[in-house]
Image (cartoon, rainbow, N blue to C red; front, side):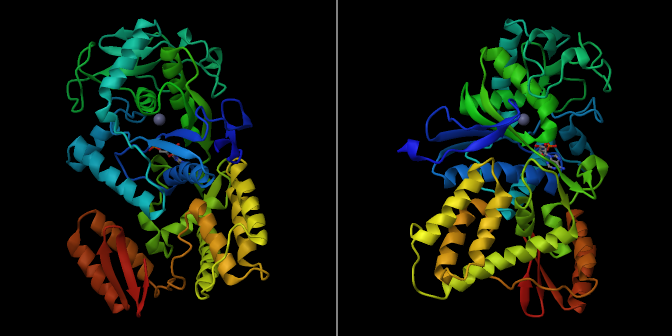
Length: 473
Ligand code: AMP
Ligand code: ZN
């Protein structure tokens, strides 16, 4: 039966072309997505990348493929140039006065809450890096055995010059990489492009593990090599992440995994483009981040952001503006209204009947051509406005499409509420106060909101407001 599954074409960053997905096992697709670094809140830019993974996951399942989806939790070892000596997890622990594992648990929960609010389906496995150190040590030892790595005072580096394929994903050529183009704190490396597989623990290091080279901790790149192969095997179908992970993270992952095994491991590498704010990349370091939890106080439900993400192809940049969010929210209401209208009649519609099957074919064609969600959304709107279809037909088609779109199209319509003037600002301040555990301020703000006729309840997912008898949130 599997050869009856629709053909799926995806853009492969490695070959720089759209190519046919040929699963290693017919009908079954294995996917690995680089997950969140859990020392701080994820922002909606990060979530755009996880939405892209979710759309791949949902599209393949919708088309009848069986998907094994792994998305990791980076709870150790993600170091960047701005905190060279210290793991960001530890830095967060220090500034927040909590242990690294408390920090990791707190931000993992926050991330998963955000994913749930955006209807991102759970992955089959969400491995934590700290629980896979033995696999990382084993891989590091293999790379040393193969002469692809060397040790200096308890730190093990990958010898990039020993791996012939280095640069094939990102197009970076070793001879063109200028030495010292980034702040180089690891002065004991043979080559500035070499990277740490394992790092010796400094004196004050909290998160460390014993190893054949002394106490230390893993590098970020080795985590994903070790976890992806542990759960998906020596070869798997698709690996996804944001565009900035292409280099060095994924380039280094290829060097590690292929270096250790001597053959290609990932068939298709996929990268999602950035979400921008006023045309600048949304990033914590740039101070321009918005969280999913911030959306309700701006007057938007989280799924309006999911809708916005569907309006741009995953390989295009997407700019977040209030205007675009209002347009997304209103288009989402339009689809929900069409679904609600179809519920009032008691007749059933058959998806395989003539006009319905035609729409379904168009939808399938759109999503199977490199996840063409903007085109798929256009099909949904064509259905919603097709007066030749009966309301139950429109409803049944839209709910079928919603298995990919994930927009909760059967949610009640009309819940959108205008907040009284000033209420949004008070809600935002209250959310901040709650985050800072400043409950006195939070209670005072609740009273101010009540005076405006806005009642606030606190739920696991944040503040829910009731305005003059209606509900939003
Ligand atoms: P991090 O937790 O920093 O490793 O980032 C998690 C994911 O979000 C990675 O796949 C990044 O490539 C991605 N990412 C970071 N910033 C953005 C952005 N502004 N838009 C889309 N994806 C992003
Ligand atoms: Zn990764």
